[in-house]
Length: 159
Image 1 (tube, one colour):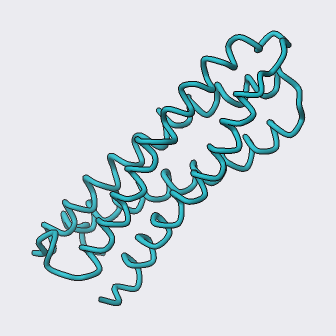
Image 2 (image 1 turned 90 degrees about the vertical axis):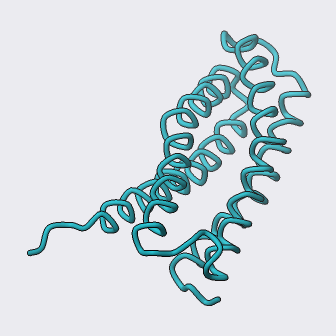
């Protein structure tokens, strides 16, 4: 068995990042949705705290590995970032998702985390928290679409 090449290592890091990113955003949305549905302030506050923890430990590092590994693998393969249509459109999709996350979802999560600290001991859950939860789920689903498209482009390389 041959030793892994630089390309192999960078591609592995890229795919690991994608698994971390996609796995966390989908799993988090599911368990947060069901936690919110309980109506139990303690469960909801705990779930909201986990959203923050998992975003810093999985989503953030998933993004770093996806970007670093992706650009590194392209470089190791002799490809520039704009040399193939699938690379260009993958970057467009990833950027679109990032804009939604940074522009809408992260501010919502910050508001929700602050609100959840106030009702973590079983207090009243404000309507603003519930409204933000609905927006977070809706925009999170929307932001996931370009990420799924980017993964498909990476695998299929149709362009």
